[in-house]
Image (tube, rainbow, N blue to C red):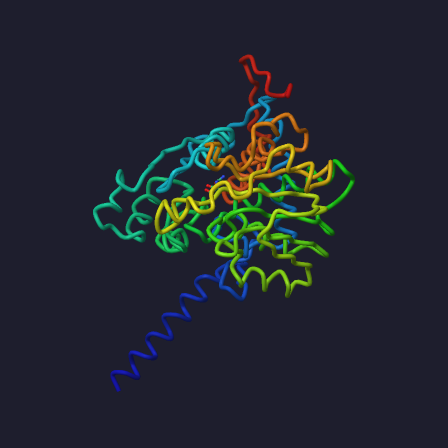
Length: 373
Ligand code: NCD
């Protein structure tokens, strides 16, 4: 009898939780992710939440942020709002671009960096930390070394949480900014994302950016993916299956050999911090070096070169040589600039101010040459 009562209670609780998740106009995907049919108040945890319509919305809002990022004007639309920027793993551009994006919308940023500086080091649960910090912030961006940790944190948060990278799992904002960059680079050649030929190189096992980007690209049509990695660092099978099931062409190789005919070449870093030992990581560092000579040998003269950064420029690795810096197809710094626009768009959308940004415009009073480059 007691067992039966407990069973009923458990089922009722999980159904209530399910309906709680479905509050308002929420729709769930078959993975349980809340679809971004509307953005206000939503967590951004996975690319699985995005369909093409939602992506187009983000990109449209991102475009509207260009004058603010170029300091042609500024806005105070988020004056008084606080971003909790929690980074429990090393980060330069993701952390700073989240902060910059929030500042550019007029909001303030409170940062916590490193596990050792937080109460998580004293055994506090992610749930408790989320309950506490969501009391101090209007929105939270978070990076953490554990897979699914950001989703677990979001369960305890009363404000929207944006995933800035959870272990080897996902990096949705990077995937969105990568896709935004791909779209812009393709537009330059009067082409769209459908029909894209993309080569991804390096650590495809531990690299979360290539996981999220591949999943997002599955939403488009007639793509050709080429995965170039040592066999031990190959793309997880479930992502390869997803690509095949979506009807795309997939080539897998462990050699940087021959001509790849790619529109985009997406290079990655060996994620040495995720290997069991440095010696193990060292086996693969420097295996696929891209410089002007290898680029000319394996790619087209218009192939766009991307990398989520940081590139490992130490001699043993040097996966993307400085001799490519003057190559006009090197899009790595266009990616980092676009990251601010996409994160501004996500903040504006999740905080429900995307249509009010220009109502709070202010002039720029200082010297700035950002618009010149
Ligand atoms: C990437 C990351 O942290 O996953 N960097 C980033 O966010 N731009 C890639 C990497 O660290 O190699």
